[in-house]
Length: 150
Image (cartoon, rainbow, N blue to C red; front, side, top):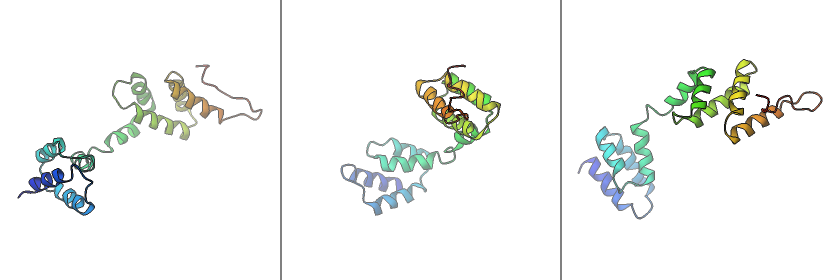
């Protein structure tokens, strides 16, 4: 019996009940020996439950996991803002996280660009930037910038 056949047999066995931890670890270890097309077939198999699918996904795309985050860290703030405002590439959430991080770390021109982009964004983006700006009270207790001026 091949590794693939064994894993499918176990997946069928544990389809209706919870996986035995020892057996699951054994199957996950066996995944490393499978070829790419076998992993894809196993991933699409109706007997494969979420636990095993996650392990297969991690093996299939291990080299790509984290690639997007690194790419966003290397992009300029202007490029990130353009992608954020287009909202067409499907990575808005990751771009938003990177812009928020840059906003908190930066006190220069990038910060104003990010504030302007968030003030033109969704309701949550406007709320977030307003709260960040309110944290920066001046000595009199008045808000320096509310996000409505842009």
